[in-house]
Structure formats: structure tokens, C-alpha cells
Amino acid sequence: MRHASSLTRPRVLGMAGAVLASLVLASCGSPRTTDVRPAAAQDVRWPALEPVDAAKKHALRVEYGVWIPMRDGVRLSADVYRPEGEGRYPVILSRTPYNKAGAGKASIDRYRMFVERGYVVVVQDVRGRGDSEGQFTPFLQEGDDGYDTIEWCGTQPWSSGKVGMIGGSYGGYVQWVAAIRQPRHLAAIAPTVACPDPFVDGLINGPTGLPSPICVSWYFYTSGRLNQQSHAVEWARVFEHLPIIDLDDRAGRAMPIWDEFVRNSRLGPYWEPARYQHRLGQVTIPTLNISGWYDDEQISTITNFAGVIADGNPGRDGAHHTLLMGPWPHSVNSGTKVGEIEFGPTAKIDMDAYVLRWFDRWLKGIENGVEHEPPVRHFVMGENAWKDAATWPIPGTTFTPYYLRSEGNANSRLGDGFLSTEMPASGERPDSYVYDPGDATPFLTDPMFSQIGGPDDYSGIELRSDMLVFSTPVMTAPVEICGPIKATLWASSDAPDTDFMVRVLNVHPSGFSQRLSDGVVRARFREGMDAPSLITPGQVYEYEIDVWTTCQTILPGHAIRVEVMSASFPQWDRNPNTGSDLGMGTEFRPARQTIYHDAARPSHVVLPVVRR
Image (cartoon, helix red, strand yellow):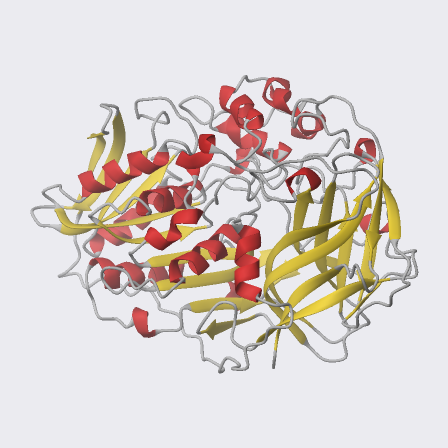
């Protein structure tokens, strides 16, 4: 997710981003499971956007404010960009909560590119936003509205009957919730950085049961029909306010949907209209899935790809599914550098040519061979190289446990914590730290929250005593880590509820501790988001944590590091350690946390090591 002020492009929305634990378990199997077929080296070639022959180029005609009726009588407003004159053409649909006028000339240039090549582009304001009628209820409304819009597009006199969809973040989410409903005219989708189900990232509540404090800025921005001015709000002070249910009022704008989401802090019937990831097997059309390793909604793209390829899922037209993962933040393909890390000149691609080739195959039937290419294309950070693979996880991946080890003093990076592939001994001492919500371990993000985290340097934060730090020796040969990461912690707390976080990092020779990925578990949700229960203080529990996914070669001279803590604020809300109703409390207390790593309770992180 990003701060509201950055949500001015048609691609926008999102937050760091399940079904997640199930994906990792399904992908990894046993921690020692190995696929013995390494991926063959590939020469990665990218399509280029070719100029249109003047004799075949279509002139642009625009119809503004076209009403599209929904099943309940509400009308949604769309702008239609289509070739001049008579004819039937495939339709590319974009549904957005950010104003269908888009990003000005840049949007028009893209629509023109499609129209000149024989497509109709329909851009629609979702219900309750922009020119559309009705009330905007984020996420809960989009499935049926998307279905009705697709069927309208597929039956117009200028339509060939085949509809594809584009869009990023919320615009990616709306594609999935429509696709699981199987509208007859939907032929392909190309979701970019799509939002996941509730309780995955922090936007539609999260693994903590609540929306991330940062995400109140998005609800502020999209409240009402027009994009709201949010630059005057002191967001950092808003995020610190308690109770969480009042963050909207603290920001200066009452937002009933914020209160409603906070009150619905467990998985149940309320959320069913917003869910789609448990129904991915019902998607029978080709899907082009695009995200980046530093997209704060990254995990949904990988989950969705894994879901649609499960059991073969060939689809009604021999559907083909593709995964594209670059070295990008939520603003995919926007440059070659994220934070302080430069990924090289190949990091940015001709995305329009890539997407157009996809639609040419599935909407126009052009035999360009996309279905015969390797379905996974991914950028390996560190090497700064693109690679292709036949499956995900990558063939040749060994899921390797790295055990947390110490002599009981792993507090901070100056402590004695280390990572080892050898199991700990039976008498190894545990590590302890005190988590104080009043001085919560911070998460690094830019001042305006336009991107929730990146390859930031955590070496300074690693000096805190409320964090355990475990590192490998410096590498003497490159180690490629590419795939899903899962952590298992054996832990106790003297509180009735608390949190545990795990972060994986790449430590440079300079000491720069580069964040790769992270994850969280709230103790009360240890048995699932639909089954909260408090813990017994002092009792040891086993916690499974999805640490999302990365693709990084740890170069010689670098090291792998794992952090364990109980806060990452404001990435996630601070657990008050009281066991109070989520989002309602104004008081908190410190908690003493103990992490065990002995032979009977071997806390560890499973890393996807790709054999060379």
C-alpha cells in the first residue's frame, strides 16, 4: 500500500501482500524436499512495440460518460476509446476507483496504442467513485459489478465478443473477483500487483486481523466520489493514535467503512464477497500475472499464479498462465532503482509490448507462440539478470532449513546469534527480549508512505535490544535464494496475546542490511484467521510464519541475516499485549518474549536455495 498522495495514477492501490501459509506449504512440501531437475539456462528475449503500418492504423474515437447498467439498476460511467467507423473489435476493460480520466496524456497515449492496433478500450469508474452512481464499498461490491460490466462490453455492436482486462492494484483485484464468476465474454486478464483476499496484507485487514495503520490514508483518499486531498494530514501522528478504530477521525474525516473493517477482525461470512483466492480453480481463462519483489502486495500475484495452475487447470480454451516478477516496487517497471539499490539497465522492460502480445494471442487469436514459452519469467536480484523457468517454485530448488542458533544472547546484531544448517543441540539456551508497544520496533518506509518498504538498510535498527539477529558466515560462493520463505518459531510470552515477526535480509560487505522479505503472526490467530484464541502466558507454542517471497543471489562477501521481533510499526499495528478486542484498546503493556532453539524446539527459517 502507499500513502494516498501517491495514488494518482490509474495503476494504484495496494499494501504488503495468503491462503499464504497454504501456498508455502503446498509449494515447499517437506523442508528438505528437492526437485532434482535444475532449470536450463535461457536466453531471455523481450518483445518490442512495433510501429503500426499507416494503412492498418485505426483512428481514435472517444465516447465519454457512457452509462453501463448493473443488475440492481445502478449505472456506472465509462469512457469508450474505439476505432473510428464500423467494425467489431476485442475489448480491453479497466475498472478503477481513481477516476477514469487517469494520468492525463500518458493514459491517452496507452489507450491510443491499443486502438490503433484494433482494440476497444473501456475505462470505468467503479460504483460510487467518479461519475458512477451508487455507494463505494471497497472490495465487497466488485465481483457482481465486474461481471455485469464484462457482459455489457461483450455484447456491444463494436465488440467482437472477447473481453480482456488490465489494471493494477485495486484494478488487478477487480479482475480476479470477476473472473471467478466466469462471465461468458471474459477471454483473458492481465492483473498487475493485484490486491489479495482479506487477512493477507494490511489493506483489507491483515495477518494481525486489522488494516495496517498506513492504509487509513488510502481509505481517506478514496472516501467520497473524488480523490481527497491528503497532503495536509500529519500521517505519522495519525498512525500512532489509539484506539485504531478512531484513526479515520484522527485524520479528520469520518469513514464508516474503516470502522466496519476494524470491527470485522476475523474471517467469516462478512468477508465472503471480497474473497477470491479460495476459488482460483474456477478461473478458466488465460492469466498474465505481474508483480515485483518489492511490491507490498507481491504475495497475491504468486498465490494467484500457483492457484490457477493447480491440477493443470487447462481451461475452456486451453488457458495458459504466466508469471512475471521484476525487481520492482508496487509501481512496477517504473525505473531501474529502488531505494538505494540499482538493478541495472535491463530492470525496466517494454511492458506495453509484453502485454499487447498477450492480448494479441488470447483476444485476437494471433499465433505468436506465447503459450509455448516458459511460463515463469523472473529477475534475480544481485545477479541483476532475467531468467525463465518451467514451473514455480523454480526447478532445482532445495528448501533448506536455516536454524536460529546462539548462546542465549542474540539481542541486536552485536549479539551472538548465528544461522546454521545444522540442528541445534538439546541444551541450547533460548533468547529473550522485551517488546514494549510504547517504543515499538520500527519499520522503515518513506515519509509520505508512497511505498511500504523496499530494500532498506536495517543495520541501524538492528542495534536495538528488542530484536534478535541471526547471521550466516560471509559467503565464499554465490547462493541463489528464489522462492517462498517459511519460518517456524517456538516461542512463549508472558502476555495473553502478542505478535512475532521474521525478516530475511542480505548483508552487504559494507554492513548495509538489505531487507528482502518479512512476515508476521498474531498469537491469537495461530490456528487461523477464523479461529482466534488467546494464549496461556508462559506456555510454549509453535508458530508458522509466511515470510513471503524473494529472489536474490547472495554474492561472495555477503551474508544472510534473519531478524526476530514483535513489532514492525507502522507496517503492522502494535499488539497491546493485553488480549483486548482488536482495534478498540487504548492501553498497552510490555511483554517478555522467549524464542527457543534447541533440538526439541528447533526454530528455523526455510530458504529456497536454487542449485547452480
